[in-house]
Image (cartoon, rainbow, N blue to C red; front, side, top):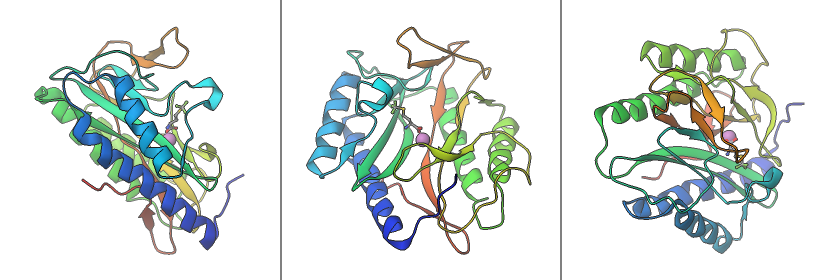
Length: 250
Ligand code: MF3
Ligand code: CO
């Protein structure tokens, strides 16, 4: 069931989304050579708790941390650990924050020092693919319009589209209906209505699209070990288009 949020709920989701944005802005200066992903997780968790909010990922289906920290060939769900970031890495920080029961969810990929032209290209066009998807958000359009826009943009830039994972509705739960795939046909799928809130999150790869899960049961890596990027916004369908509830503050 796809829920329609009322004004009060939308206000709470704006607050949750703004905390997600603020946490990303807070953590960015720490993303430097030498810091471990576990230290990033600790800093983020403290930021969330200090803002009277909930790190929703922690304990979700047994997930052990407050953020996902996915480095280089890791597409999503990298578990923070003792790995020290090094010059040339890219890292996606993905976080879900709960405020008075309502959730905000956003991911961006960050660079560590100087990165290769290939990684620059991957980051630039994964973020642009996200905005291509967001541009399709308006009442009357369908989920497939978003999916197709992301797919067409990604493929035009020769990037792999991971098919095993997708975006989703969001509200009091981090994952609600509908699924928001990153590939599909225009004019298909559920119709968008004002008050729906969805997460659009292209996960694109520099090489082939194939992925596998590590034995930890979470980490998803590219099979060819080439890098992946992931950008995600929580987006509200408005009367005449959309509102990004997790705006970038940097
Ligand atoms: N934030 C992720 C998403 O976009 C989900 C995180 S899974 C978790 O859907 F286990 F880390 F919570
Ligand atoms: Co999400």
